[in-house]
Length: 185
Image (tube, rainbow, N blue to C red; front, side, top):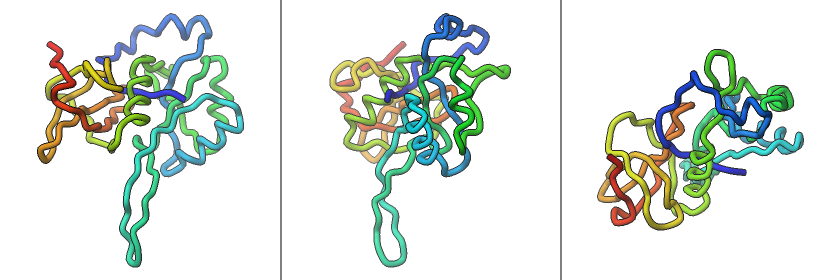
């Protein structure tokens, strides 16, 4: 499975060459509410390469606290398929549609998926974050997220970088050391 971050604006008018050649690309998959894990199970049974980023959340109930693995992007997961194989994905129970423009699924930049995967696998703390359109764009220059780009924010004396998937307008915040990033002009 692979991953995603925000690396720039998307131009839906220009499809990538890979989709016209039948090569496998990453696509965002929209699911029914609270069906992300169930859809992932169905995709695994169909031998579809998918990525469902999860984060750990402590929920408080009346009598106890419970640690749950929650989807980082509720309602979405990512699949790597050739467009010719999309029916195999769309027929899975709980799947609504592939995200795209003008009725055509739009492939995600591979670097976005790789950066998100690195953030999920190597980050001590990752959590959902509201999608931001403003703020300083930064690039990580050292560490496991090297090369990832996002928006730099500060929360309670902790520096975070917002990794964004523009196609689905969702973001995740990952803690970074301020010395490991540089501003992009």
